[in-house]
Image 1 (cartoon, rainbow, N blue to C red):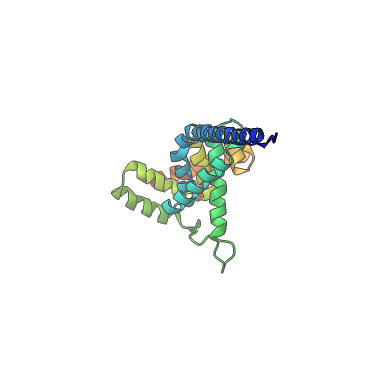
Image 2: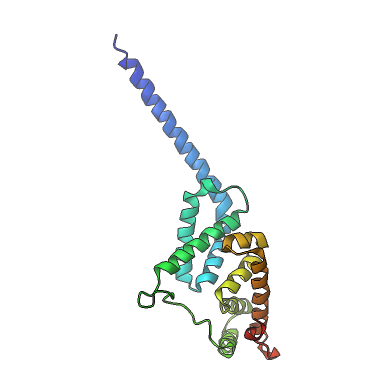
Length: 205
């Protein structure tokens, strides 16, 4: 008697069982990702917004970061999920900057803001914003006026509440550099928020 009649139903049943198991595993993985990572979406956007100083770019960066995070979720080792996600956000931002290089200059981002602007000009912008926006909005814009390494460190420490070690891992610099950047960022922020003191962050660098 031909054994195919017995073999083929078993094979189909096994394949269906394997497919159901894979679908179940995928559903569990998706739910785990949703529970662990989605609570940090606001932090991811805020970080991307401070890095890029552009809401549209930040949205694209966060979308790319969450896609990468989901695809690589199996590589997450169970440590601080926010730190892991923000590291991906940073990489996505750097990739975005690299893709937006000005081909005529070959080095600077197209929308790069001149970091050598005078403190007086920054203060005038802050005063104008303060007249039109809330204190929270003014503070956000003030932080955005800081040079990138200091702005990034300040956001990761003060807003995202990451440890020095986590910040060092994300930014790829020693902990001592993180601490130095944080101290300088705080000094710069204080000078911009309190221009009447007569101090500038340039004088404290």
